Length: 413
Ligand SMILES: *Cc1c(COP(=O)(O)O)cnc(C)c1O
Image 1 (tube, rainbow, N blue to C red):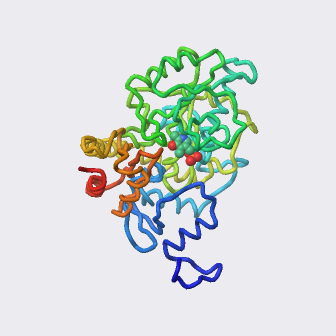
Image 2: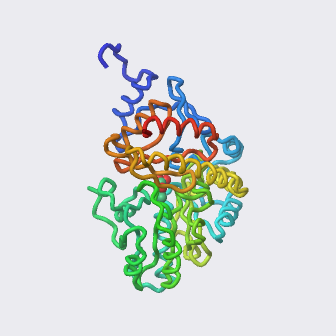
Image 3: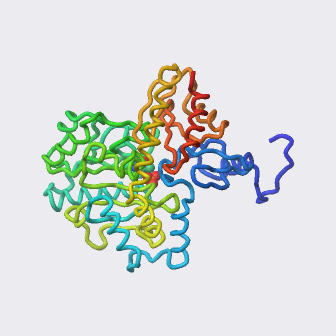
């Protein structure tokens, strides 16, 4: 900037402006972060490098369901740091069995295959479904098909973006992985028509997060469950964002009494401390793997298991789910009152999780996010006109009220 004294190369940078410029100069521009530089955080609040506080209503896309640095999770991580952090799966370690057993139990399933990031877990689910299709269902070699839905978000790997319908996520990354069929979300007739003898799985998010918190029509998930059971097809629920308390239940599928064949979990499973993901299913499904056929150096490491074990223990009491349901009811009621104002065209959500479509007159989702940032509230836009709101489940009632006041200032009459 003009007037700034020149900074010698390599000198320490401290102001937000300098740090943002340095990040822009030295990192790939695959993100466009809001102009805030976080230095510390606790609970639902973050503090920037200038000491200004912001209420975090994004919660790391639900990776921070328990808030920043939850004391139980920090304690579990610190205790494990003093014991053992990494063994690789070449050896056993003393946290692994408990992690798998308790996660399977939380899911009402039998077996766990741990990975690290969400995308890796979805990839693992794709491989699981294909292997199950060939070994158990008897699909002819190379013929397995997986049915997915439009506007999905399952991660950023080459295979996963092969069946994305978002041009930004997909363009210039071909050639694409074959074997996927896309049908509209919420359309059972289209799904029925897409299932063939070679279909091994239906893969979908029970509530679509990245698409803008899209809740399917009532009866859709039970319909998918019935269809997949009838046709001997695995129902794979990507609950990476919707699961682990966000919607007011442990899993979003529970709202419709549905139990899928496979859960894909991530984000909050790592407690906002470390990346932890997993595929959870029956022994009949995950039993298809033999040694050497799949793996991950870091998957199921002792530190990840220790933190995830604490996450699972926290979810077992149901208190976070109940809190999400209660605060979520208030969030959605209050956001709903903005609909008549001409500034908001739609409000969707489930639990403590909302997508707000902003009228064009009010600017883009990005502009609304920037206005909220200036008022001390962090949210994130998606797909141009939508702002998504997903506070940590630990947010204090009065903090949520305060944030809703700021939202009313920006989007109210
Ligand atoms: C975030 C997300 C993923 C990808 O998780 P990463 O950890 O970013 O790889 C996959 N599916 C859903 C539904 C997600 O929200």
